Amino acid sequence: RGRLAKCRARRRCLNDRPCPIPRQTATKQTLPIMIQYPTMRPIATDTHDFPSMRRDGCIYVDKTMFIHRLVTTVGSKLFFLSRPRRFGKSLTVSALKAFFGGRRELFEGLYIDGTDWSWEKYPIIHFEFNDVTTTRLAEFEASLAYHVKSRLERAGYAYDASIPMPDQPFF
Image 1 (cartoon, one colour):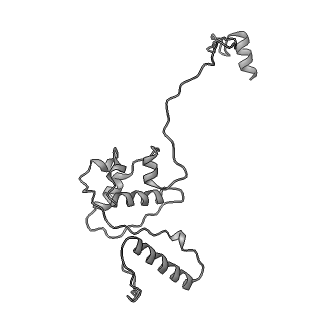
Image 2 (tube, helix red, strand yellow; image 1 turned 135 degrees about the horizontal axis):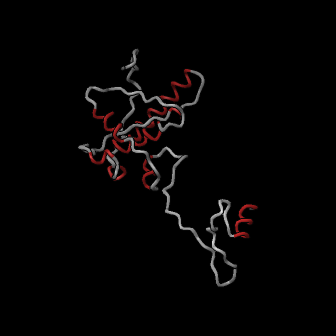
Image 3 (tube, one colour; image 1 turned 30 degrees about the vertical axis):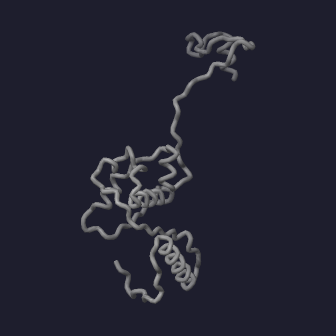
């Protein structure tokens, strides 16, 4: 405030050039000078929902080239996405859901929109392991079975509890 007051009083800036701030007296006839800034797109820092980010026009770093490479690599069956906290894992999974849900309109202007992907709609079952909160194995198995059953039913599939679980993992 002190430097600005001196600058306006002397009408010279600190580098001895004329002051760029115009001298005005505040009257009822004069309006304040408004600086027009370009409109900036919002940056989503608290969402992991790809469709809402695209609908709201938020800034999105296009990673769809990697998604396309991930799903079109021949012979790949299993992927492990390992990144540190707050690195976009949930956002990537949400983008994969939209991708396999055939929602091409969400990908307009992104890399994957210009590829030869067929944009078919596939059945999607999404598990959130944050929903399974327990410290005991028996509780975990029961909670996991409940979540698997509810997700399958939501996707239109039947859950058959009579099918025994394999002794070995499938991968």
